Image (cartoon, rainbow, N blue to C red; front, side):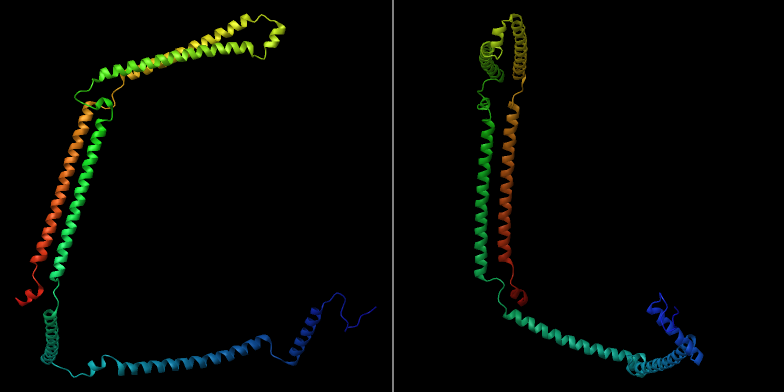
Length: 335
């Protein structure tokens, strides 16, 4: 079956129809003599060049007018116009003009200074005194009260430090009972021997109690192992000869006990040796040096406190003398 030219071919889209219509119209225009795309672009380019030349001419004219206007304003409003228009003066005339200006300036400054001086003198004549008698008395009383309070504080501080030093000295002397009386105390060797003897007796008593406790524990252990062991019934039924085995176990326990006792005696002898050869905690020389150092520190602190008190007193006296001897400003100007 044949298809007509107006009907769309099989498989074509509407876009193909639009493209066909556009191509037909374009070909018809070319055939009729319409300008091409390049010709249209050239026409628009020529029009744009003409418009740009006109704009460039207008801009040049505006720049030229602005330059002429600027030159006219420079001639009219320049700060050098007066200098250019001023007549030419000689050096003597210029010096005379400067001299007149200086004289006028000096006269104005003298008048201002005279007015300022008169104002200052009037203020000095009518001013109130810097310190009144009541203010000076109150300041003097305040200084005396502050000095008295400071003196009381220093005395309290000195008393507190002396008490602290005495307490430190008492603590140093009573740190050990052996240092209670340095002149009538028992020698260190005798006190050490007595302490070692006392400690040895205590350790012997403790050793005796420990041996008795160990002996009782061993006996109780044997008794419990024979009466409360879970193997008692089985041994009773089997009736084995267990004397050899018990003898071996007893020998092992005796060896272990001997080893424990040897270790104990060894540690005890080492402890006795350390007690016998140990150095004293405080020697007589150390105590004497500490007491002398405390006395030196107390003396130095007392000297510093007295120096500080003398400085404060001298400063207060200088302030009093300075406040009383300083001349009044009115007296200074009236002289």
